[in-house]
Image 1 (cartoon, helix red, strand yellow):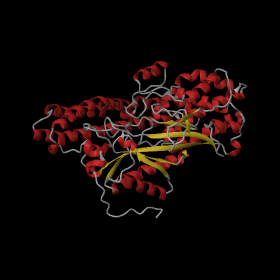
Image 2 (cartoon, helix red, strand yellow):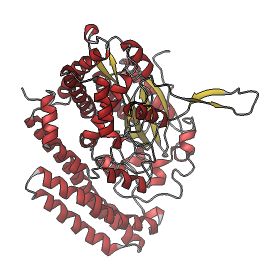
Image 3 (cartoon, one colour):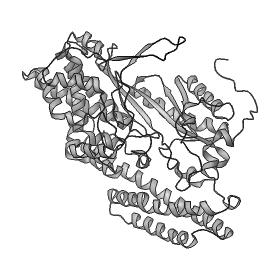
Image 4 (cartoon, helix red, strand yellow):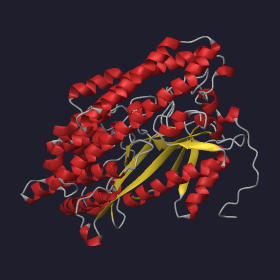
Length: 538
C-alpha cells in the first residue's frame, strides 16, 4: 500500500540505514548484523514559550495561528540575557507548571531529564533522555500535548510555534542524532567504534560518508525543516541560517584533513584544555578544547550530530527519515564499491576530497561567511516553499526509491500536503490580521484620534485581495508561492503600520495584549496556588 503517514517512511529509512550500515561495518571489521543490526538514536530538545492565559485570550493571532502577527517590542526584551541565566522563579507560575509537566510525562514513562529557562523572556526548554528514534518521536508528540494541557491548569498558555514573537529568539527542537549497533556500540564515538572494529580508520570512514551525505543532500535536509514557523526563525537570533553546512571543530577537521591527504590513519584524539580560575576553592580542571558551534545547522557534538535548525512545533519523523536515508545511501555506495574490489580508505579519502566544501567551522551568522558558503556551492534555499519543492526533484525521488523509503507518488503527495499546509497557515494569519485591524486597531485609533487610520483601512483591502488571488492559484505550489509573498512582504509592511499605531495610541485605549504583558511572567504574574500539587513520587 501507499504511505501517507509520518512513521512508515521512518521505519523504512531505519531498515535501510541498518542494512547498509551493517554491510559497511562488516567491511570495517565488525559484524553488526549478527547482533541485530543498527539503530538510530535521537534526543529532542523542546523549546516553548509560556504566557499568561488571560493575556493570551486578548490575542486572536496567538489563539488561531500560534504567533503574533503584529506587536511592537517593549522597552526591554532579551538584551541582558538574564532570563537565560536565571533559574525558574517561584515568583511566577512557570516552575510549578514545568514540574507538573514533568510529572505527567513521568507517569506515562517519558523522562524529561532537564528543564530550564531559555534566552527570550517567557521562553523555556525541556529535554528527555536519549532513545530510539521512533520512540522519541512518538513521545515528543505526547510531550507537546501534555505541555499545552498542563499550562492551562496554571493560568498559562504554551506556545509551540517557532517564532511567536518578533525580534526575540524563536524556538527550536534540536534533533540530536547518532547511530549505534543494537548491542550498544556508538558509531560516532571514535574510540569505541575503532576498538570494536579493530580498525583505526573506521571512524574516519563513517564520518566521510556523513559529510558526503550532507553535501549532496543538503536540499533534502532543508526540505525536512521547512515548517511555516521556520520562515521567521532560520537565520534570526538563535537559529542557524538556511545554508546547510556542518561544523566539525578544528581538531576533527585537522584529523580528517590528515586522513584524506594520506598523512595518517590513526585514531582521533580530541584535545582538552585546563581551566584555572585562580582560586584555592576550585582547583584547575580539564575541559574539551572545543564547544559545539551554535551557529551551525548540523554541528558534530561528540558521538552525535545536532540538527539545530529543526522547528519546535514539528513532528520530526521526516527530519529523521531524511537523515537516515541520505546516510544509508552513502553506506550502500561505499559497500558496493568495496564489494567491487576498491579499498575502503581510498573511497573515504576520495569522498572527503569531493565533499570537503560542506565543512565550515566559522560563524554562520556573519553575512560575509554566508556569502562565502554560497559561493562554495553549498545548498542554500532561503524559501521554505522552494525547499519543499525539492522533494520531487529527480535526484531525491531516485534516492528515496533506491532506498525503498518513498515512492515517486508518495513524494509527490507529501509535497502537495506540505504546500497546502503552508498556504493554509498563511491564510489563517491574513484573515486574523484583517479581523484585528478592523475589530481592534482601527477602533482604538479612532477613539484616540491618533495613528495611521487611512493606511490601516487600505491594508484591509490589500489583504483581502491577496487572499482572493491565492484562492485562484492553479495548483498548490503556486498558491504556496503567493502565500509566501503575502506573508513575508505584504504582511510585514502592514505589520509596521499596526505597530506604528500601537506606539501612539494610549495604553488604556489599546485593546490587544502587548508584548510587555505577554512576555514578562516575572513582573506581570503572581503565584496564588489554590492547593498544593501532588507529584508522583509523593
